[in-house]
Image 1 (cartoon, rainbow, N blue to C red):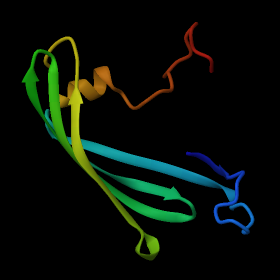
Image 2 (image 1 turned 180 degrees about the horizontal axis):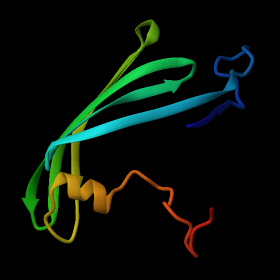
Image 3 (image 1 turned 90 degrees about the vertical axis):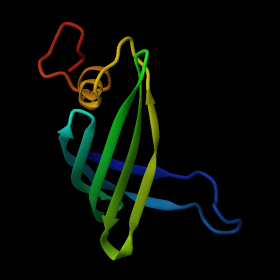
Length: 124
């Protein structure tokens, strides 16, 4: 959750005043379920630029050996007023040893960036 701010200092179209977008609240909440250790499904809610979206995603990983893994992923957002987006592609993970997708997400690339407890090195 947070606040969106947009600022453009130059006119987008010559002769037209610079774009102005008011500051607004946003959120992005999601939950994921690992069907297997290498297959993840997710669903959630996104509120941005005054529009609500249902978000859906999936990722399937397969080992390449030597600490590497590839995964195919797809993400989509279905919003109000006909707004939508899709993104799909291939991710390559590098590491010291072979791991499952769930282990890579939890150990090597966690999404949570706020420490659970304050530590001497945290700045909370």
